[in-house]
Image (tube, rainbow, N blue to C red; front, side, top):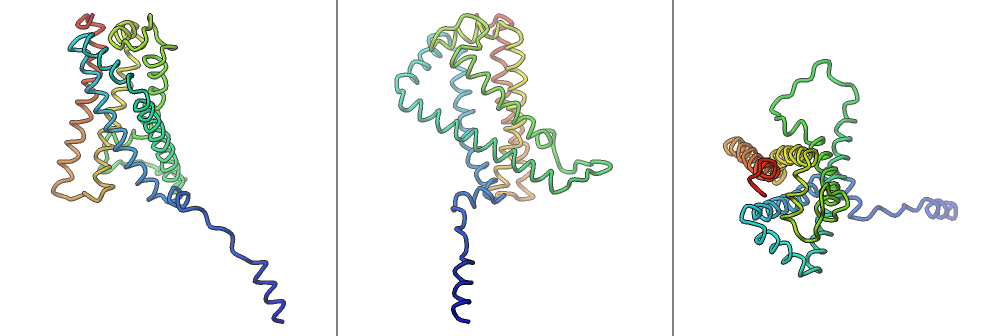
Length: 236
């Protein structure tokens, strides 16, 4: 009797549990935490990239010198690129999975959908994310690698490349549409970040939401100003 019991215990040994990282990833709260972390990284990059882009209004020497300075330290440049790529992939994958999980929790749609306490930015978050992801791929091929550039491409010469690229109207339109998506995504993303960090309060939440909307709008408009300036001849 005791032998049989021993055999039963041996054959029913527990399977190895998934690793801590996998368990963290499979937990919706873990995914939201990773989205917050990667969102912070990507938001900081958006702000830094914007500051770099605005140097185009100072002149070719300023923005081209900035680009050459970045390329002097290849180790730092590629480290930043790897971190950004990882952040984009984690952010996108976590976002898509959370969206699909949310959709699957209610397979039967409401007869009449009512969006309460929501904004255009929040309702289009997944679509603005898809738009940005597609644009990032195109943007890298266009202005970083040059294989999708509409005009003559010069290596590490952003001023000349921006002018030749945005004179091609479809490229300028694609950039404007993508920046609108960035503005909406940043708007809701910054607002959600405060909520995820537990900084939600009835007194401050409306102010945070307005602040996020202003930041997202200003970032979008500042970036959109570049192709507009090229098309209107302000930059030449």
